[in-house]
Image (cartoon, rainbow, N blue to C red; front, side, top):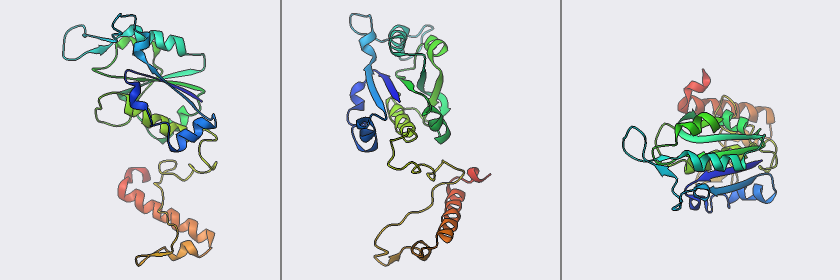
Length: 222
């Protein structure tokens, strides 16, 4: 998969995709990530990308021209264009999994008071939010989206089944995990996990997952 990110602040992405799983995915060519400065498409001599809104009001609005030109330069027939905005659908595991099926994503990071409505009407295929709160721009949401989507791309995770039992991949949140030593500061690993009885282990994990889900997200059990 290829992901192109259009932003006014490319420096915010330094380091975030150069660590851990994303770094390995890029090295293995499972995913390609390009960060683009929208100002590079501005036709204004000062590389201006925003203007005052018609009708008045506070703040500035991102202009049509740089965004239109950038998307038209980068987009292919297999591209899905996503706008990161508080007005979008709230990102969840199902949305991330569906986006991972695309060959090419363009992520548009909104900023200021938002973007010219004509960009949304003509160029945007999907609008996504990461929660019901307002951030300074779409950069952090873009990072979250890339991380969530990347986990579903073949070859990114070490094991093909790694994301099958993750929280939100089913109706349950994930069960507790333990590792060595079996006893630490008086706290013991549940006996069933060291019993070798795989049927009992699976039953215990499912019961624990239901307990956690009931406490944190009872709506998932409805």
